[in-house]
Length: 390
Image 1 (spheres, helix red, strand yellow):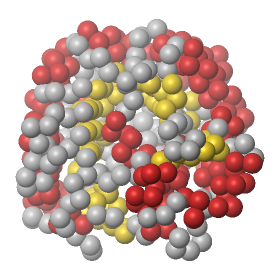
Image 2 (cartoon, rainbow, N blue to C red):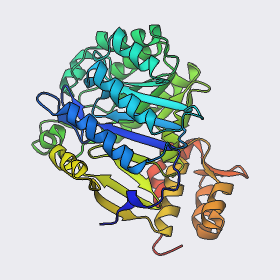
Image 3 (tube, rainbow, N blue to C red):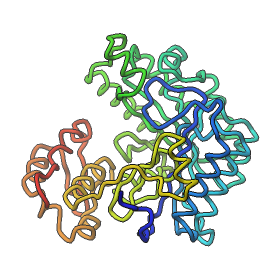
């Protein structure tokens, strides 16, 4: 096994921390997570800190931190405070974080928890609402109501947070266009700053996958999903949001700086059970099962389970796939700096064809998807697969 975390880090600017505990398990979720009841939560927090200390022996010059899950707010207030403080200890305090995000589930954060997060320097909240239809919430296994979702957003705002994002899902089984429009309307009434909206993907190892195979649920047609996306895009544009990434919409100055790390194909630290990271040209995944992760860290071992050294070809492909998801596109300068060549040197035919088909636009400094290209993103991305080393 390549001990990627023990090589001298290339000073990534971002840290992702995984909290794998949940107070309920959503039917569509395939992330590494565990029902929190009777789990060794305090032991996990202790070993998480040991893993971070082992990799970041000196405070790192980090710009963004994202604490996700699972559900960070499934932890008690004091437990979550410990996690946030442990992470801060691993960052260079002489340069304030540009963004410090925590995922929140509706109904799991009261005044005390929000006040604590504010005190510990959290600047951005990502609240998992998904839909404001109570019937749909039950059908997808969410443990909150629409009323609790609204109350959580209002409480976060009253607690002083001025950068609040919510997650929404469309293409849910039995979801109608009227349901979707109502969810968008109710979301915009809450004066939020950012929306991440994703169509349902039925993943293996989920309840939805089992039910799908048994014929108990039926995904919506792709055309309906596309219509729902266009309705969302138009409504958010009218409300002052811009689509800076295919699935992400923000008011001016409220884009997710942490997620741009992923879309710009940059490296980052990943800590925790089942966390993924990208260091020194190697993508890695930590051990997922809690006992395995805890045992490895306690023994002073590297908790990394899988590693993949990213080839030059794969790196170029990822640069195109991920960069084109963003409104800003793939930077000509950044591509040349990384690969010592132009993307026209690598993809001359694909770029010419996609431009002629009206799917791609060259601004001079970057390649960007056109509006038509955004709706046919997967078709565009497939044209950047390379057969051999570029």
